[in-house]
Amino acid sequence: MKHQTNATGKRHPQPTSWSAMSKSAYVVLFALLTVVSSQIVAAESASLLSVDINVRDTAALQRGVRTFNDYCLGCHGADYMRYKRIASDLNINEGQIEARLLPPGREMTDALKSSLQPEAAKQLFGAVPPNLSLSARARGADWLYTYMLTFYRDDSTASGWNNLTFPNAAMPHAMWDLQGVQELAQHAESTTATDTQAHGHADITAGLKLIEPGLQSPEDYRRTVKDLVTFMVYLSEPAQLQRSAMGPWVLLFLVLFTLLAWILKREYWRDVH
Image (cartoon, rainbow, N blue to C red):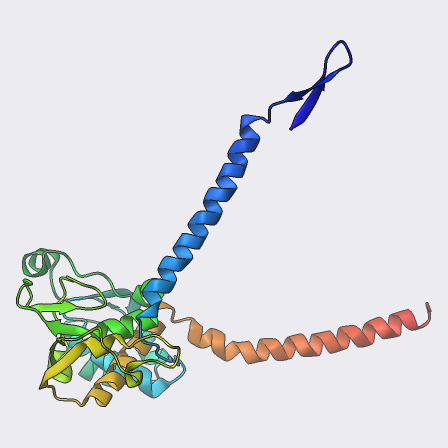
């Protein structure tokens, strides 16, 4: 609190300005929002499965792009990626791209666009499926991995499917033929020690029970989903392949530059001292 001296020489307290109080209130409010938001993020990530993604695994990327083409591209698009870039980055021959991935009438320079028209998508799903170009950056690899593992049969929804990670999503389970059909377990809240991840959080898939096996075993399906997520992480930032390859050379340059700078500094200051 500030003080003001009057004509008699006495000092009287002067109230703190409103602007200073407002600044303090904003600081306190920002701190509270930061704490609350961090707790919300922690609570959301607590139930997600952890997946180790390596975008430099070319074989995983090649398997992932095939899965993406077969199961995702029918409804979703990836408008920021072109077939020619995939061929270059993933070491796939353009002839293989044209034979296996490229739809009829498309060119290698075309983007990965869905053949589903927006009007038809609204009629089928009630909404246009989102573009998947940046979904890995927006959601994160763990979220995508968990999402593709937690579909279950729910006759109360329009699609006949529901999802523990994203409840009441309009998207049906596109990969059900690989995973099979799951349903909610009767005692989903009871998990054993084997259903707990290494980071200490309960496995969300413990609340689901496989009632109809798919074409793949649960282990093989998880590997398929991991490959798909690996490709989607690459899809969200293709330049990371070049950046990660360039990183060691940049570090080597910095080490050599630091050594030369130290030698030059010692030589320069030797006569001064």
